[in-house]
Amino acid sequence: MKKMIFLVAGFAALIAGAYGSSYLFAQQAGSAKPAAQQGTKIAVVNIGQVFNQYTRAVAMKTELEQTLKPYKDKGKTLTDQIKAWEDELRKPQLDPAKAGQYQDSIKAHKRTLEDMSAEITRLLGKKQEDNLVTLWKEVNMGIKAVGEAYGFQIVVGYGDPMEKNLLDQFPNVNRKMQAMDLGSTVPLYVHGSVDLSQAVVDTLNHWVDPKKKAVTPVSGTK
Image (cartoon, rainbow, N blue to C red):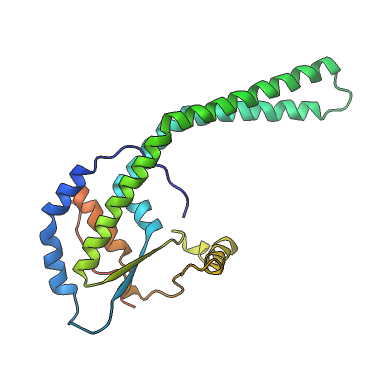
């Protein structure tokens, strides 16, 4: 799952929505929770799917992109100019005076890029960290509520690409193999009846906008 950076989001409104929507889980639990059984029930949630489909996360990402756009545009202009000068430096019989000017300009542009990077860090650094933590808390609120509604005692998070064609490609396979080599647990098969990803997404989005549908049946039946 790609690293995501988020801008400020109010947590109090989500908490209010969570309490105000508590009746949803009582209704869903009555129809979805199976008869009492022995043993611990374990479900999974694709955190990447939740972060990509949760409307507040999408809004935060969009706001971030808008904040960074002027820097990205300027950075592209600078890097394109650097590349053009480097191409000129590769030409044979280049006038030494011109070569010196190009080299000085390249150094100056690279310093500007470094200054821009430091400015972005100052502008967004602490705010990025705070908002990622806030979003993490919100997502876990949704996971807890849905897990309890369906009678699961443990919910395990994992990350898979949203694009199905990437699941069996080398980067994803290698990522999972490396995680297992380091001692982590990776879901290799997930029955649809224990995948709560979509239910968590729907619940979080309903808390943000009550007009949206609430908890759906657990993803998949196969």
